[in-house]
Length: 446
Image 1 (spheres, rainbow, N blue to C red):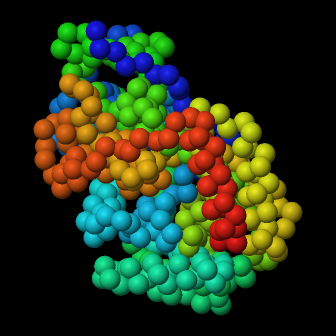
Image 2: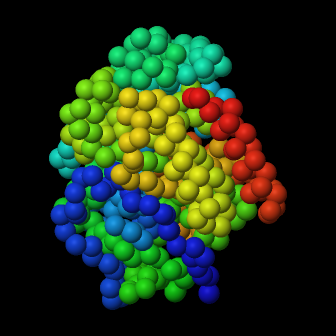
Image 3: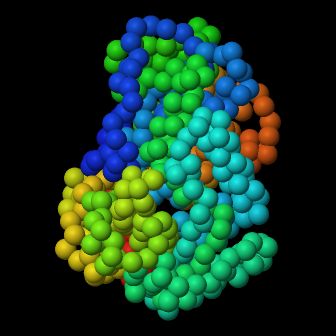
């Protein structure tokens, strides 16, 4: 009998601040109980899983669709990212984000993902503050970073994409910080309140009849005749089609073993800023800055429409194949406090209200695993640090493959190579973290 057993279950430390600042859930969680049947079972309710469910509903309106998640909606990595839904090339392992593949094709796909998400916002009545098409800035705090911005600008010009170079005075007027020498603004990024968007997407799907069971970690699934039996602690569901949208936890089920890099990033969020804080800070009420060097520090400022006047700092990463982050949390908190104070000395000493870790999954060659992995089993996983847009795409891809639909999305992902095999342990973890620490040091001002 073919069986897939989960070796790890999702466990991320810290409070998911994005979720906490928009208040309590409107209803209690409904775990899976008993033994039921479904036409499709989607495992994982992040950007990929909920996008897969929405695409399935579009293709088969009368199908019985069940989504299972180990947590409450937006408590896992979907609610722990920085909320940048980026349309342009954004290769995290490059020097300046320029990709090595067909960037024009990837940009078209990313914009398709943004359009798909935007249509869901309209259809489900999701708060527009949670989906703000404001664009973003690559911030440069050193001459080397400015040179990386110029290199990326040349790449964008070659692609025929618009951008605007910002000087130090403009950056200060935007952010209230003297830290940045320059910036590169691009208009196509949507700035999400990621927890608000995910919660709204889940509520919209539930209203259309999609069954979403939270606090229902999947322990495994096994073949029983022509169906699969998906097991949780309190119940099970029999289904002919399983869609795995669990990003790096794909390896926990035994798929792509030894080929996925389990990377964790850390973030902190201020308390709500007082009137006096805002006066000292200056700047605009909403903005998002990615670092010119991909290993630098991401910053966001949000306002009351997105959960209060707050600043989010995100930096520090660690490769942890065993998914144990205990030793990383103290260092991450100290580093991010210093990064915040470097940028906003006028708010020096402000203690962060929330801190958390989020899970990324990367492959050495930058490919996803969005394809059929067994009879009746499809994967929409491995987002290479681009979970909001790439996760939306891989979820759509898995749903379309499960329904026998061919599209530009399925053709793109099924044509990708297999993930390259990683070096064996312990060299993988030791070597990768040494490289990460060096790159973080090199990008220490960015």
